[in-house]
Image (tube, rainbow, N blue to C red; front, side):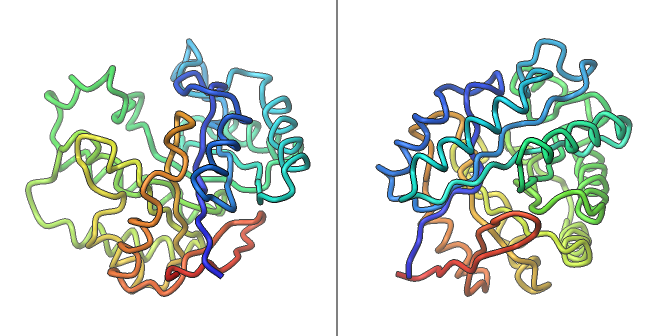
Length: 273
């Protein structure tokens, strides 16, 4: 059976998206998506997100989870999973564990792991784009992948989202990154996580799927499971170029994708019609 899945969806609750969850469900149905995972950003420490424009506000996790679980019950023709996106923040471990514990207690079963910060710099935030002019791009990539590998092997996440996010605005390292890619693939395999093929990259200045073809091939060679998501921040982005992502996965050597159903349980998804 051929299915279109979207495993990375945000709503207006995160502070930088538009539309309520019900609108995303309607959009998914219209786009032919049969299975979807809502993955709202868990609350960040106040020092990183004082205005709650990057993540859920404190205390919103139970309301968010209840909304998604209610939509799942009301839409039996769709497979709707309550998930969350959680940042890897080694300097804020207590806060992060508290948020994950609250999310699990509320019924959230799938956790995407992300690296959006280097120290306190949100390197993918358009409002902080100017910082790229003052940093060494090669060093950013090295530090990013160091953190990404630590997150992938931490045991805290089910899926690692948008694996080469630093390229978002078109910044590329000057040298060969194949060793970084091999380290990432090894870490994902060792950590037992899936990785995400994110079509959001095609909507950004880099105009390329996350991950890049060479990194996607490294994951495939290492036997790392792969899922697919749009990272939608507006209802019309749900399902964005999912079939194109399937084609990229086939070209990289994947025969199947996976759909996370909770607790590191996967359902196999055919990549061919």
